[in-house]
Image 1 (cartoon, rainbow, N blue to C red):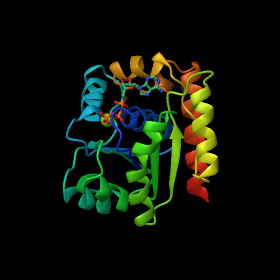
Image 2: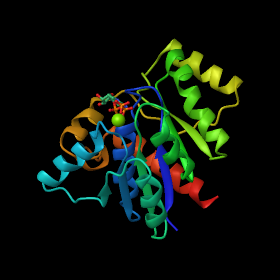
Image 3: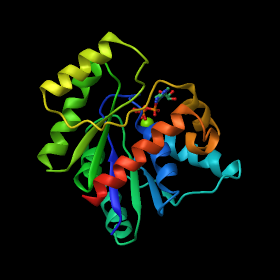
Length: 208
Ligand SMILES: Nc1ncnc2c1ncn2[C@@H]1O[C@H](COP(=O)(O)OP(=O)(O)OP(=O)(O)O)[C@@H](O)[C@H]1O
Ligand SMILES: [Mg+2]
């Protein structure tokens, strides 16, 4: 059975597509990965089109929307490996459908209070659907008082946060622009190390 990971966060620009692309590429080193872009903005679909045009190995890819999301997942779940789903920046029907079918919901969170508040609607759906979920801290600056404040607030809420986090690094945007993940474009970078740590923690969660 494939393990379905939905990347969701109501807040626009939180890093959903960046996380989905990089995690899919890193996981694909060990297992078959299918990517689904359910966002009408199609950022991930365009990333994948660049990937193919530039001759990087394509990933199985689809862009289902509406009720087709559930159908696509029912079919893909029968295979091995992982399905990574990118979702739109809202918590309407499509995002909710993707969350409902997920084995794990990853909620990228930039360390600021407005971003934390904006994530609450997504978290509520994951909890209502009884889906396991984790925050992934993204664009974390090297030192920041506000990041500490958010970390303290997350601890106070006993919110599930993955230890692996992604820093605020230009390597992510650079790799995205060439249709790659950072583990391919800059394999020895700090960004690549962070993505590998994230992929390891997902493999560990799946094993539980
Ligand atoms: N860790 C990071 N370091 C630096 N830049 C980042 C990082 N993560 C994301 N970005 C940048 O932030 C912007 C938004 O990222 P992305 O498109 O992945 O967010 P999103 O949540 O998918 O947005 P939307 O809600 O519009 O779908 C992009 O320019 C991306 O390159
Ligand atoms: Mg996106």
